[in-house]
Length: 159
Image (cartoon, rainbow, N blue to C red):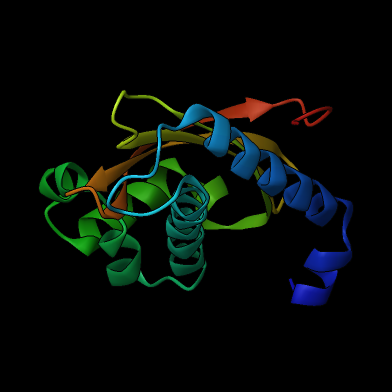
């Protein structure tokens, strides 16, 4: 899908609204800025990590997709090929999605080192999915993906 199609679609409008809400919720929900940066920068960084992995999946770049994983995920799958095989088997809607919209993120620990980030996906067959990512900050700086749970959605309302 080209950038023009993405930017002109109703999904893109929802994505922009969702991103604005994501930043607002981050400002309210998170404590004062840590060494890693401000809440706005954290919200952007979390989104970029997920977007980066989604782009790597779409390009079949196992090594790059695996680079976004947390140390615990890397230990579980050992290498990028094992990780990509698991994604191909269990998460085809993430691997080959048609569109993606970010929903509101939530800080899930006191130190704001873990965020739950939900993403609405539409697969290439038109199915609607909600992927909820656990994104963890390492050493107070780098964000990594510590897990993802995917469930079908009705597609009627996702914001």
